[in-house]
Amino acid sequence: MRAHLGDRLVVESPATGATRRDGEIVGLHHEDGTPPYDVRWTDTDEVTLVFPGPDAHVRHHDSPPVGTAGVEPPSVTGPPVGAAGPGDIGRRVAVERRRLGLSREETARRARMSPAYLAYLEEQPGDPTPSALARLADALGTTSAALRGGGLDVPPGQGRALLHPRLRELGPQECRALLSTHGVGRLAVTAPDGRPAVVPVNYEVVDDAIVFRTAPRSVAATAAETEVAFEVDHVDEALSQGWSVLAVGPATVVTEPEAVRRLTRQAHTTPWAGGEREMWVSIRPTRLTGRRITPADQ
Image (cartoon, rainbow, N blue to C red; front, side):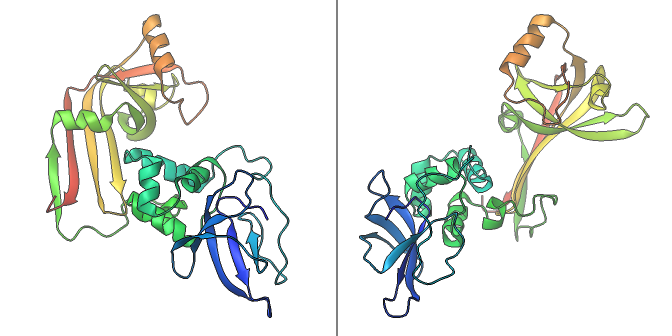
């Protein structure tokens, strides 16, 4: 018998072949996947050390449900063929964990699971059980639906407002901290046809300037040599709170070759829109304001 983290241990009745008990394997004691295993039982949510008997078999996480009672799925000795990186759930877990500044060990402790299993979820394609996903969501202050990508194509902020919200103005220092080093923000400009437009851009913060790359004839390029507004925000759907920062100031094209090379070299990401976008635009904020919504008692 061999297993991987995330597989299920199923114990069946010797007489009828019906499942008597099952649980998620959350800890391995041997590198080759042989018993014993740490198993979190579905019926009690408790983790125990298990030495499987003849009435137990492993159901691998990437195998379909067993159609014939007592028939063990084919043994799996490694990750699925072609699995080059983490699955969608694992990526979202890792992003939320890092955003909160949590280590894997602390996140695993909060979610009552093995750090090795959490590492497996973040690094390999996997589909945790509903109970494991719920514990992870609770540990990260989000929801199982959010970790699965639910609501990906709907605008944020559709949850209920706080019963007693508090809207607080942010100072310049906190605004700069929230802008951080890079991310995606919204640029408000006057388009070539004279109409107002708002476009999302990948941005960097370098020497207190907000810089982004675009194409010379794009809508974002019309920001050059004008005063623009640039907005960044974050909404925490699970807690119905969030913040926004607004920067206003003149935008100019970066033309000095060494400055362009330095920006390109230090950039954290390439523009998500793709294509040839080598025109750097810099915004020097003359006004920086922000607001945060939190519960009234915070």
